[in-house]
Length: 169
Length: 408
Image 1: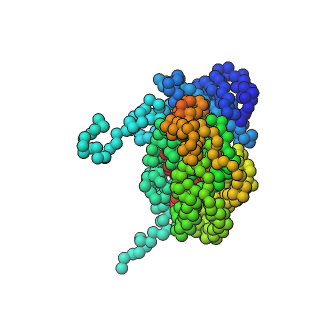
Image 2 (image 1 turned 60 degrees about the vertical axis):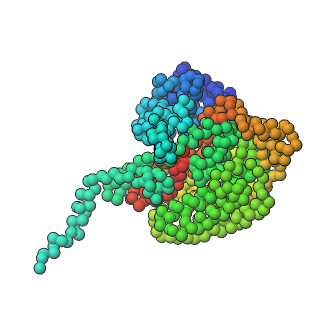
């Protein structure tokens, strides 16, 4: 892990080439996180790749409800040579949940971005094949969002059907 | 008598073959094909016998475990996440627990760490045994399945002995393990450790000199190391291509740095290397278990912090404070300071990372598993492209995907 001063130096470095790239830095439990401007995700990740973080291990979404902007996307980067990890985080609002896709640069992001799109509704612009991946194609809504109720699915084929036909409607 | 020259098509065969290759055929493999190891569906584009493209389609086993986890207090999430990758339940539990312990900034007693390592490595052997059995079954070696499952049963019996369950044991708890190992368990594990290398030798004796198997594994499904790194592939698949990346060595957790073991790696990254790497890992895991048993430290098996771990049963009858702690832990659960952690460990299939976000309450605000099967599956089209449909089955077998982990 880059230590706290190392993280600040890294952020400073990134800000030097693009003043608006890094919004914030978080250092928590010996883990470094860069909060970046959503529009600059691709360039920041490319810059970090040049600094040695050559592997993207995971991309996942978070719903920060009730905080705004609500949705967050995390990129977990790994440097296999220095054995170092850093998290890049971008926040987008639910009314315009769009981020540039990093799949052209990092082929591994393909499935991960599809999953985030499927479960959170974040649209990755420039993704070659942005479809639902876990939920059915014709599914409506993004179930991992915090305002999506648990048990929102009707249970078909139960004994309830005889007692109260079509009870779920 | 009819003229037979017209029936003799031998000299026309290449032409017939060429005509056939004009047409591409797209078919579905799965979601219920027995060789897909679960309900994985693959859309395959075929040119005769040759695979031109393959697109995995998943989601048939999606049960919304990550969503369910948000609705449960931390200690109740453990049995839920264990059910994701159902052959690596100890690993799922540790990835989640490790993330929570980091959020809590909690120290785990050494004995608990060693007990965790013993169970993790038994689980790794168990997972590889299921793999060796089913993968060889896909390649036509039926007897291997029974041998693999025989040893797997022994391990499941050991799990039952230590925790009461064969699968999804809920043995790991935040702060340690649920209870100390029972009397006689260590001796049984020792006996298993003596037996297992001999059994693994026998597997090699069955498989290594099998002409059919060797021909089907060698030089099939080759993917270069560079391409695997691009695709985020980890675990035995990456190691088979010669990259010794193993989180147990690189970023040791749960006192893996106390043990002396090697990381088997391959050279070319074909299916044969994948088989050899996993087979060699059986021996290394046995070595780790033996060392952990010999050096098992004395002391508590779970943290003494009563705000996190349940008090011992006998204290409930005498101590009011213990009763209050017990009540609070069982009803509300413990609260975790707000924060976000990504905690990666080395699962049997690669990097198993758990992301946990806490909002300060007693339930996680987000639990996400970076499952190695999910990411490794992206390599599948590269493995099968321009190979024969028969090698397609071999490739799925050697990829070792667990659909429960892919779909979660």
